[in-house]
Amino acid sequence: MNSTMNQFKNISKYSLVLIGILYTGQLFSQLQPVLKNKRGIAILPQQGDYAIGFGANPFLNYFGNFFNGNNNNIAPSPTFATQNQSIFFKYMKTNQLAYRGYFRVGVNSNTMNINVLDKTPGAVSGSTVKDVQKTKSNIVGVGFGIEKRRGTTRVQGYYGGELYLNYNSGFDTKYKYGNAIENEDSGLIRNTIINAASTLTIGVRGFAGVEYFIAPRVSLGGELGYGPSINIRSANEITSESYVKPTSTLNTTKVSTNSRSTGFALDTDNYFGIVKLLFYF
Image (cartoon, rainbow, N blue to C red):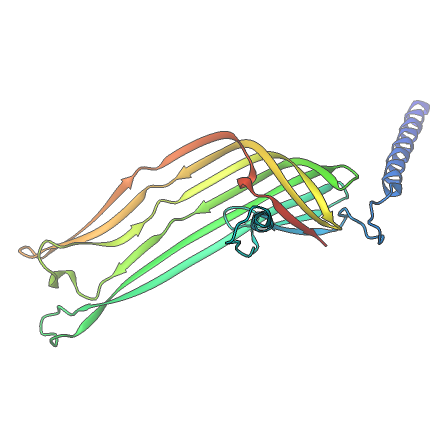
């Protein structure tokens, strides 16, 4: 009984010491001076801040052209912080730790109608019917990572890791013809469905970069990364139909123009060569 009580007392002492150390560390971090400009506004992002970023390259090119005599200096406009049109965001969990991510969900659909001569037996001369071509594609890009920051001046270093997934369905096309194939010319072969090859990329990357705060909570930054990725590509399939008039036979065929493939890569990257302009709020 006494032995158990002594162990309990020792654990309690260690717990109190640990709590004291953690509390002291937290208090010390809170007491660290906050970097401010001449008007007293904090320059660096603080716990609870959010950030949104886009590519600064058009702005850098625009202002850089002032000094090289370029007479065709195109006005800058915001561009995406990642090359695949993803929206970039960040949340400061603490002053030195941030959650970051990006996302893109794109759905594209297009319908094209073409008037063609009506070949139905007995149709009015010169009348037309519609061939309809429908094309669609889906693009999904998501990523999530954790970013650790260092530095107390306008120059901030950061590093961390992130997981990402990108999917591109390619352009799938379906055809609906106004004329039945048996009324078309003999020997005609026409496509009804084209399923494009889709691509799925899954990867993990470590990264390290630098941000320089040009104004309170406004920074320019760039980063390098390294990590593995897996790329899966599906087969491209084409479905077509033909009609044999002597036997009144409708034939449907499906062929693949390429086979399914899987690839692996392990390499460095420079975040698409983009300089990020980040706004914290």
